[in-house]
Length: 182
Image (cartoon, rainbow, N blue to C red):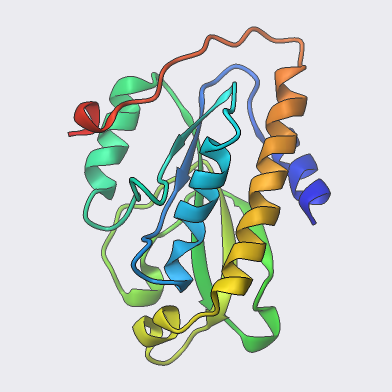
């Protein structure tokens, strides 16, 4: 899965824009920790051409999403955003990962009114949706979420490595610190 996802990412990412990875979720809910887990895994590997927002230490969640998106646009002129979030669905789809063009609607399963984000998105199906979503997210097995996070993070690292070897000029830009995001 990581190799296929990496290939699709590489084809979808522009060569001439800053790539921001917005890893959405919270460490306070097992099912919703997919994004911050991926963000932390990526931060541990010192990416050269991608900028990561949302980690276990500094999650990107409902309470700070709007302000962080504003900070991203202030700090990174004309960014290309890859949004990552957990989602709920059918029992037979648990563990699947989907990637698509366009924005992601964070918090949709919990009926939250959050701004859409992303030029492309990755969604990881962590559990069953349709009834008592908050409780379902709280009772999602960490093992499934960790496995999905590791595979998605590996795919992003592979894409970044291949992209870094590309024939275009990349101008590194330092990601906003917590103080700059305020």
